[in-house]
Length: 242
Image 1 (tube, rainbow, N blue to C red):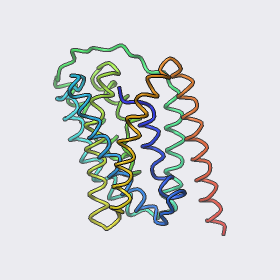
Image 2 (cartoon, rainbow, N blue to C red):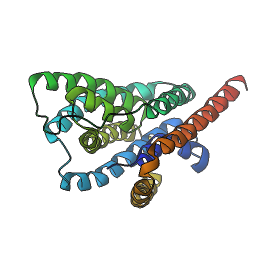
Image 3 (cartoon, rainbow, N blue to C red):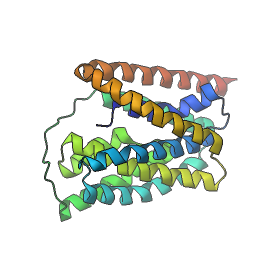
Image 4 (cartoon, rainbow, N blue to C red):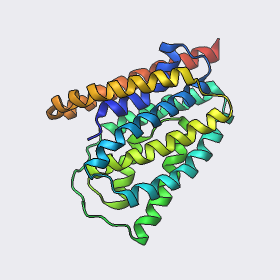
């Protein structure tokens, strides 16, 4: 199962590029992050595919609708001033942290099949989630997993596996939009992808070791995300008054 460390890396990629790596343009950080997240999700997808956990009809329908939303969201994101975008991004991080603390039911229908009603829900929700993902340049796994469960009633295991299709599609759509505008650092993206693949192997083992403490782990991760978000807000406010 896709581990919590992957989701933590998704949401923290932009702050790391800005405040640790030293990228000065928030739009370049978002474009580079989106490319890295998409590549890492694609690499992780194969294991879930082989395990037979991906509900392809639902995943592809959701992803196709979300790609349209991501294209719109990324276009709007490039039009927003960089500092204002970071302010909104920090608020989104706090919302993600709160969502992490909500319990998810593992029950669901593992034999879910595509129907007209499910298709309509997947398209509608996919458009919205894709737009949010594209606007902020994040993979959106925190949104995609509960969205798939809401739209289809599939178990969380299938939702987590199927979400990688959408994370890949949304991230690549956003990255291509930013790359078209020259807002992707290709060298840094390559390093991020290599590090993400290596970190994913380590993260999977660590997540299995700490699986019995998942509630406590989510609390720690949520606290880290909130701390980084507050730091971003403080930096943003300080620059505004400077």
